[in-house]
Amino acid sequence: MNGEDGAKRTVAATVVKVLVHRRSDRGMSLEPFASRCVRAGEVHELVTTDHTDTAPGARIDRVGFLGFAEIDRAGVIDRGDELRVNGRTVGTVLGFDACHFPNHYNVLVRTPRTLTGPDLRLAPEDRVEFTPAPFTDD
Image 1 (tube, rainbow, N blue to C red):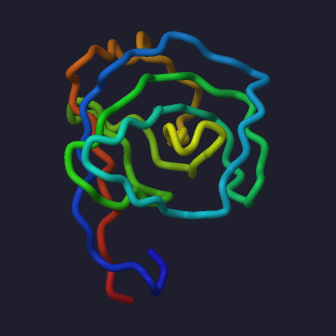
Image 2 (cartoon, helix red, strand yellow):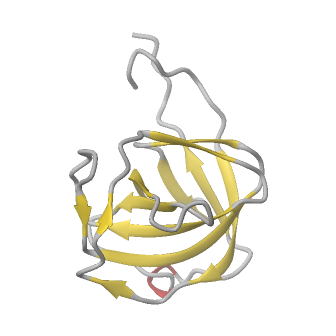
C-alpha cells in the first residue's frame, strides 16, 4: 500500500464466458494507472500473464485468457489485488490494458505461468473476487 491508499471492499464478479486460448505475441500495453473504478453490471476480460513489468506502456505478450466476468457491485480494482476464483487465489493484478475500452478492460493478472479458463476448470456463474491486500496505516 502506498500513502494514498485506504481500506476498500472486495470487488466481486460472476463469470459470464469462459475463454480457452493463450498467446505469446499478444502485444497488450500496460495502462499507466494502478487502479480502475468498475461499475455494477460492467463486463471485463480476465487475462493471466507471467510478465512482471509494471511500467506504463510495458508490452505484454505472453497471456492466457480466463474469460469475461460481470461486476456485481461498483468498486475499485488496484494493482496488487488478489484474484480469487471460487475462493482459490489465482494471482495478483498486474495492471490493465485498454485496447478494447470502452467496451471492456483487460484485467491483467500476474501468475507464475499463463492460465486459461479450462486450466482453472472455470465455468459460467463461478464467483470471482478481487481481494485487497491487507490495509496498513504506516
